[in-house]
Image 1 (cartoon, helix red, strand yellow):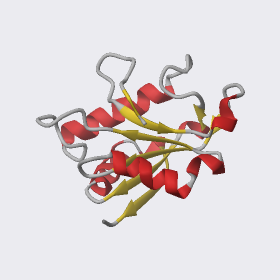
Image 2 (tube, rainbow, N blue to C red):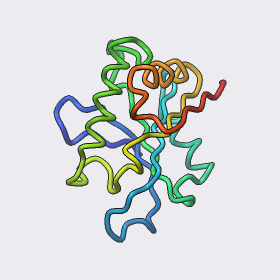
Image 3 (cartoon, helix red, strand yellow):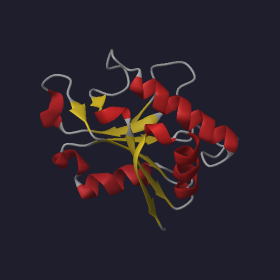
Amino acid sequence: QARPSPREGCLPYALIVSESCDSGRKVLPTVLAISGEEQLHVSKFFRAWRADEWGWQVVVPLRPKMGTPYLYEAEGVDIVVRFMQDLLKDVDEELTPHAIEGNKFHLVGTSNGGASVLAVAAKVPELVSSLTLVTG
C-alpha cells in the first residue's frame, strides 16, 4: 500500500511489514526496493515472496510524478539517499514501525531500478548491507 510521506520533501513509498511485528518497535532487516518506472509492482513482488513472514520490512520508494527525476538519475539518487537517511533517523516511527538492522539496507533493484540501487550503493556504501539486481 502506498503511503504519502509525513515529512516535507520526503518520497512517497510503499511499506510491507508483518502484522505480527506490531507489538513494539523492533530492529528488523530492511529491504529498500526500487524499480525503473512504476514501483508498485515491486511491492507486489515482495508480498508474493512473503518478506513480511520472514520478519523483514520492505520499503519501496515511489517516484512522485511524471516530470520528476528518475530514481536512477543523479538527482534521483540524491533523493533516495536522503530518504534512506530520513528512515535511519526515524526514532518516532513516523516512516517505519521498526528500526533498521545495523543501520544498513538490503538494496534490491528490478529493471532500471538496478541502476538506481547500484548508484546508491556506490554513493553511500556504508548504508548498504547487500545489493541484489533483478532483471526484468
